[in-house]
Amino acid sequence: MKTRRLGANGPEVSALGFGAMSFAGFFGDTDEETSMACLDAVTEAGITFWDTANIYGTGLSETIIGKYLAAKPTKVVLATKAGIVRGEQRVFNNDRDYLKAELEQSLKRLGRDKVELFYVHRRQPEIQVEQLVEGLVGFIDEGLIDGYGLSEVAPSTVRRACSVHPCTAVQNEYSLWSRSPELGLIQTCAELGVAFVPFSPLARGFFSDSSISPPQMKDTDFRRQIPRFTYPNFTFNETYLQAFRAWCHDKGHTVSEMALAWIFDQGEHLIPIPGTRTASHFAEWSNSVEIVLSAADRAEIDRILPLGFANGDRYSDWQMIGTERYF
Image 1 (cartoon, rainbow, N blue to C red):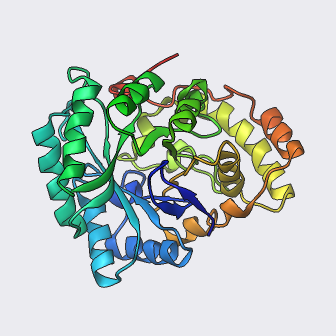
Image 2 (image 1 turned 180 degrees about the horizontal axis):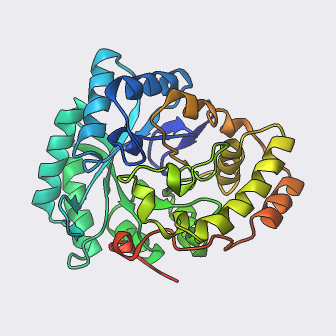
């Protein structure tokens, strides 16, 4: 497995990371045995950068990872997140004491004394980012974390954060159909030595060889609220996908492999964290880091999936609360 550095002063990790949100059942039914088998495949592939969060299944994702590492000790770099308050309302809390309490609970579930990376899952506007980072630096000093990260933030926030203490990583949605980070965030991270961690790099399962049409989704599926996965938007989006799928297959690759290869091609500081709950789906893209795109490949991808092709927003209005917009 190829490696990349997690921030200018961070550890070397696998260039391909793994996101464990699906273990909490956001995209369909799951169980512990299936999740454990998936982590077996992830481990065997040499993926050493795992990402989770306290809110994924109210700690379920962290608990599964903790159980796995206790049963099969594995050297991995762990990232977790806090800052979204559980409940029906979209509420955020970046208070230092709150974040520390949540972090300590995460460490218990993960079976760790510390994590290598701790993200603020969403920013609370009432707290200045400089004050927020000062609190996170305190966690570093206490030995609870090695570095801090930010999620769904603007380039200006990253610059302000780094003026207090170097940021290890910034995590924002980024894929062939969600490309707003190209408007300054990817460039800012490169300039400041911050790793850029694309989440949902496979567009929440859209870039796949398998159909995921809305009628196939369970009522509890997170995607049913996302405009891009509702009709008529999905019909238009699927037309683009079918053309991309045919091209990928002609190249001898899966859709997910090529979608991730495109991510790797955007910069050496990008470390995507695709997620799945099954070993079989993981196998569809585990080799993506080995694919090298040519100039002709890049041009053809741009032709098939032109910038801004997606119909519908990447989040509903409710889901968008807390994400920083800068365009």
